[in-house]
Image (cartoon, rainbow over all chains, first blue to last red; front, top):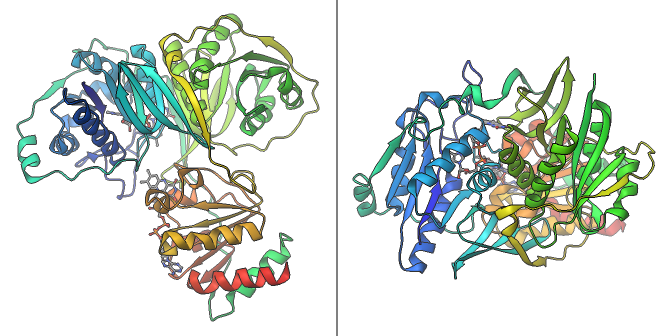
Length: 258
Length: 321
Ligand SMILES: Cc1cc2nc3c(=O)[nH]c(=O)nc-3n(C[C@H](O)[C@H](O)[C@H](O)COP(=O)(O)OP(=O)(O)OC[C@H]3O[C@@H](n4cnc5c(N)ncnc54)[C@H](O)[C@@H]3O)c2cc1C
Ligand SMILES: Cc1cc2nc3c(=O)[nH]c(=O)nc-3n(C[C@H](O)[C@H](O)[C@H](O)COP(=O)(O)OP(=O)(O)OC[C@H]3O[C@@H](n4cnc5c(N)ncnc54)[C@H](O)[C@@H]3O)c2cc1C
């Protein structure tokens, strides 16, 4: 069984975010593997392991031929990667990104299952998995907290407000994986060394036949204003000296919630 | 300013309409000349009343059967858009709402604006706002190109208000073929029983964070929430640590809550948490670090140990009950 995992390479989320002069997210400096995608990579490796055959291929769209995040996922055990990097991609919206990723999945060719996270850490539109599914005309099973594959079918536990639903579809299919559902492995030293020589297929927008459909012109949205959000004012702050709970009680009393 | 026809994708919540749909309809009335709903669920006649009361004149109804609601919703919308040409379709940024807007965008080749908090008409432009960087900045984005425009909104972005309209006319939509997207079938549903009010609807929300120390101490949060007839919530740190289910998470990647009172226990107040709760009318925080960012949004901040303050608080409230 062959699994393609879409992995996003993002600016370090611990650093304060900033916008460039064109109002896109500043993506200079080293990018890292979005932690949300480490769960999909781990899930894919486990599924291929269970199947006993096949391999995991990564697909990533990122500026400046960035491979740091890909190398991390290759070191975890993925076999190879496709990297789409092209100046024409600046300003691409979520649908444009999905078009690129869907074409890259077709380029890989023999995927039974495509995994993504439920939403990225930096853009978090949460639309990419279903968009890729629709573009490929594959079913998209979203918010999976558990995945099983067998008999040409994929079965997931889909997170819901009230619990979870068991959802099944014939392969090939797309599934999005929620955070925290598997324990992503740490790359071993051997894995890190091996990752350096694993193939990364670098492609452009033209290679995918998407000229003119992505980037600013394809996005059909324009930022018209960016401003600071109104701040909420802080109120009283008291040091607890053994009776602060009384302040809470009187506060709640005044609000008539008790 | 207004535009012609605004649609709201209304999701079902059991046999009822999900409350987000009523919030969206209320906003749709403000910006649209005609407001209609597309309902994905099995009992449209039962919900036509409440949809009409919130401004929908017509409800196009499609039954998803055992396919995913979002997949069928997207296919139904594609068909209906071809027949009725709405200018704007509004979605809830929920599990099924996300599936629906995403599937539809790929079907009809339209961009999406997601995580929106508001929308307005400016001249001939439709502009949506969204909070970024953990809610510290507000970005306004205009749709370009051809309608219909597709926008998804964070729950609780608008307050649902009835307009007193008559029941919406129900139009059953038949012959929707979701194609391969419809091949994902729900085999069964597992419902984890929860008592008390829903997190998004509770008047009082008591949330716990990593400062509770260990999973067992979440009982403090639950007990306090119960005493205040509220709902228990959580920071992502303790959801990721497996102490409580994801459905409890408040914040950017969890729920947005706007209760009368929000009580944060052992939560630092990361921007991604604040964005989900700083719309509360009143905020109380207990944190042992006097510099914790949660205090910058708190009406009442207690610098103290949750294990000392909360048990005494519980005791005091029990004594009054
Ligand atoms: C704050 C912010 C808000 C934005 N809002 C919008 C908006 O409302 N509408 C819009 O159209 N665009 C928006 N964008 C742009 C959008 O984030 C980009 O187009 C991005 O390339 C794809 O969307 P996402 O990361 O939000 O996808 P999501 O749907 O959140 O991503 C889900 C998963 O898809 C996969 N994936 C996503 N991108 C890639 C990639 N480049 N390479 C490999 N795998 C990937 C990953 O597995 C990821 O975890 C926004 C960007 C920012 C920074
Ligand atoms: C893309 C992204 C999305 C995110 N989405 C969310 C989200 O939706 N919701 C969310 O909550 N977070 C979210 N986060 C995570 C967020 O950044 C924080 O890591 C998280 O909120 C921290 O949780 P916490 O406050 O419980 O833990 P910590 O930050 O570890 O804070 C624990 C606090 O407890 C205090 N404390 C310790 N012991 C005691 C004691 N005995 N008594 C009193 N106080 C004590 C400490 O002083 C500290 O302030 C997101 C992060 C990213 C990058």
